[in-house]
Structure formats: structure tokens, C-alpha cells
Image (spheres, rainbow, N blue to C red):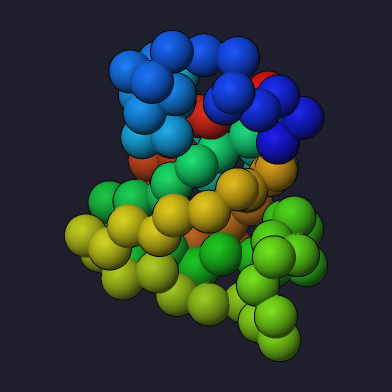
Length: 92
């Protein structure tokens, strides 16, 4: 993330880390630009790794995020092959 949490109060930083900068529902196969800090699957969702910036994960391929599961990280972008997710925005 280009902006660090150090310039915020403790409460503001905690809220930002929890995705309280907003949320979007993704239910298409378009690329969505973040940054995002968490992804929650509303239905089983296939994440297209070739179109996402998930370079912090080693040796990963496209994967299915089961309904109800949340993953956390610093996602610069998200693209799905199928399914629906909530993507929680972080700080840019």
C-alpha cells in the first residue's frame, strides 16, 4: 500500500486495516482495482490469479474461495472467473 497507517490515529488505522474504507460487491469477471484488505465469498468464487496482484502469496494458482470464507491481505486488484465476493477497501 502506498500510504502507511502511521499517519493515522490508532483507531483510524485499525478501522482502515479492517476494511472500513468501504466495500464493493464483485459479481462479474472484470478487473477491480483496490487496494483491498479482505475478500469475503458470498457464493463459491474462483479467483483469477493471472489477473490479480497477489504477489505476496508464493506458488499460488487460481483458487476457489468457498462461500462464507474471508481472506486477508493487501490486494492491489481482484478479478474473478465466477462467483460473488465482498471486497473491503484499504487505504490507497
